[in-house]
Image 1 (cartoon, rainbow, N blue to C red):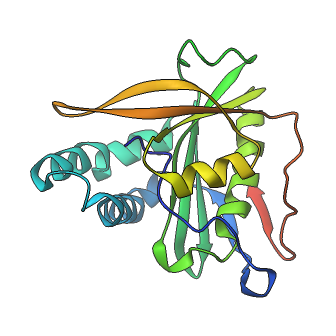
Image 2: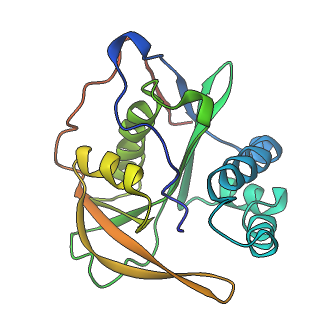
Length: 205
């Protein structure tokens, strides 16, 4: 159950699409981001893991102090998608890639969370387009991620978005060993879907 795998609708009919403002987060966003990440993670995995282990993971991974550190990390880009309120966020970072990722200059899509009420509205596609730009700005030529092997909807979205499955990686929820699929795409490849009209580009400031 790695973090870049939250369940969302694969397709967004054009008449349901909405345009979001997407910008890079700062330390002042830590509180809102912490609450949003914890809520969406628990909403997704409440039925798949023991509550005590899930809450320990959430408390460690999404504490406001931890989020503030990640927001300030120059090797991590945290992208916030808003439609009035926070609708989704993604984190892209420089990190060590697993051996099955053999593309040049790999950058990781570490987290990709979309609030359930925005599923099927085109938010995922808009955010992924900005993820690719942020990964390129971090010096990447290859974008990779880990996704839980049983999250079929997320895997379908990533495959439709140009990712290919290259292997597996372990994920430990305390002493529970789970299996993630490792997916990769080239940042030189064009997106298979257009940017919806009215989408604001990511701020680089």
